[in-house]
Amino acid sequence: MKDFDISKIRSDFPILSRQVHNRPIVYFDNAATTQKPIDIIERVNRYYEWENANIHRGAHFLANEATEFYEAGRSKVAEFINAKHAREIIFTRGTTESINLVAFSFSERYLLEGDEVVITAMEHHANIVPWQMACERKKAKLKVLPMDKNGILEIEKLPELLTERTKIVAVTHISNVLGTINPIKNIIETAHQQNIPVLIDGAQSVPHQKVDVQALDCDFFCFSGHKMYAPMGIGVLYGKEHYLNEIPPYQGGGEMIRKVTFEKTTYNDLPFKFEAGTPDVGGVLALHAAIDYMENIGLEQIAKTEHDLLKHATEKLQQLDYIEIIGNAPDKSGLISFLMKDIHPYDAGTILDQLGFAVRTGHHCAEPIMDFFNITSTIRISFSFYNTTKEIDNFIVALERVRTMLL
Ligand code: C6P
Image (cartoon, rainbow, N blue to C red; front, side, top):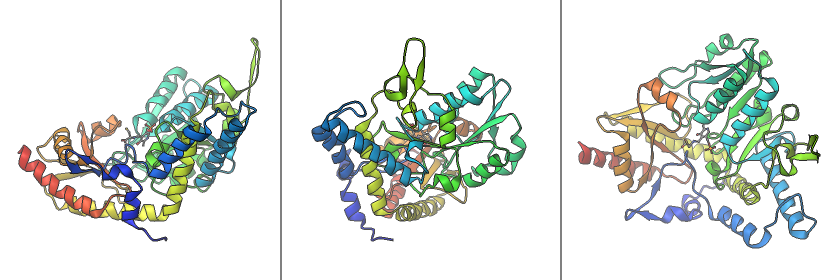
């Protein structure tokens, strides 16, 4: 591993030197969105200052250059997640749009009345609602793989849940509420034994660990740029080529066509078939820069640093008898949801904010998880490699302040 200079890394992120409520900010809301390093901010600026042009449609220098940079971004993403071909990478607005695309197009092609879609008990709304909509449209059935009280999927129940009517399994790699890292390779193998394709929601995994879509053998994989140091509004759908070829387009217009007449339209090749309209070119260039930035630190280093933060915070929180951690899987990513005895998460979040700590409170767009634990919300802290154990220690002191102020 390379040297990890935390002061240098923190100085790459201008916002981390900000004060809020007259205190230095401690940003523990990285699962919602990460902060952006100066390199990435400058990459977007350079595009709009110096390189701006629409792509794939102009026979002039700037258009050709922008097209070249945009396609280099696609190749970079393909290499980053080890896709077989760059044409298996579709740019979207984010994980939500990627899942909606698959839920719509896949179900148009494959889902029939009486068929089944399997998801799990720990999905984000983005991996529930699009499937519910597809099932409603096609009169299919949504089935849910359960989890236990520690926030671990009961994957031994998966084989019995899969039937000859199951058309797809959609599962999150890492839960944004519980932090659980799911055994997706195992899930994919089980589904593939019955020739059922698997979609992975990788919104919370790609920013934190190395992902290899060929080694996983997943059929679709979705993630968002803004959770991995790139801007909001750019995301990725990876799909195996044969599925992307077989499913119909999601939206019409722009470069997704081959030939249009009033009688009939034929569609473009991959990946353009799924990229209707002017894409977020600046976002793709910045995503390219974000991957460079992460690779420069090293994916292993990122995973190790965040794991150390998780371990430190978990040990500290476990020492407090008024804290209940929600999600106690042995294999967790760098985020912790918890409750404070006799204090509503919203009230705790408000005081923590006054003390300079940015945490997230609420249902985290995963209401079925809240129902399962019979709660309405949690306090969630989520780490990036730029956080420190000192920030965690200060946070523990702040929790004591919250108690003295509210009880
Ligand atoms: N979770 C969180 O604070 P978008 O909004 O499309 O970039 O990502 C949606 C999404 C899908 N799946 C998972 C597992 C996610 O965590 C998210 C986003 C944020 O937890 C906002 S609710």
